[in-house]
Length: 425
Image (cartoon, rainbow, N blue to C red; front, top):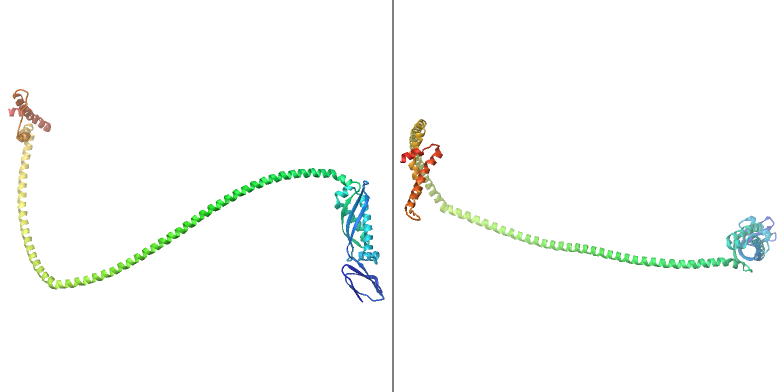
């Protein structure tokens, strides 16, 4: 016959062919009726409230300690399961819990007796670890494993813990007040810093907004300028295109006019050619005949004039040769005369030069007196009698006459004053 059990339960089969007994934790087994026996043991976790009242500590202070322990029979370990079956087979969970509780409470009392109140109260973790360690070593031998142990409460009836905590409480209260004041101070400081940061953030935000507005305005201005530039370029392109179109139209008109003018010129040329042919037929042929006649007459006249000019030129040449011969002869005569004069001058020196100057003196006097000859009226002015004016006039004339030899002397370097005086006398 098959028997099954859950994971929180173990089955022990004993009897025929089951020595030692078969232990199964969470499974199934076949049992022969009448010759084999099956028993069950719970593997559920047991929660124990371990309470030790008025236990004296190492310094003789009675305290009450309450702990919470979690424990169970270990079904996966065959040795512990066998030990648990030997000790607790046929017992209920309450009986198993009572046995474990008595064991834990004894160990808890023993540990409390070795510690002071301050050690238990201040270091609960250490106390829990010691109870867990000591209790586990004994309960393992029973097949029970301690899952956890926690110290729940520590108190006493002598107000020892209360008195112990007064100084600490006062210190804590003092620290609390100091901490509260520090916290308030820090809160005020942090609030001031927060306000400052808020104002700074507000100013930075306003600056950022101003910068963003400025960037927006600059970019908008740049975009507007670009748009306006594009519009202006578009308008200029449109106007340029219109101008190009007008120019193209004007060029086409000019081409049409040129074609028309070319046709008119062609017609005019044709008309001119026709008129030229007509003129050639009516006028040019007779004119050419007349021109030919006139050319022949002009050629004959030209030949006549050439012959006359050649004859006249020959006559002039002959006449010029005669005149040149006469001039040459006259020049030779004058040259001979000049040579003879030079020889005479060389011979007579100052006398010949004086003679030559005397020959030229009348001409010089004539040239000097020419301005006086051109005078139409001479006015004599004096203060008394007229003799003084006449004498003055004759004196000026004589002065002019006496200056002539001086000028000649300066020009020639020959003293002729005495000779002139003697001859004029």
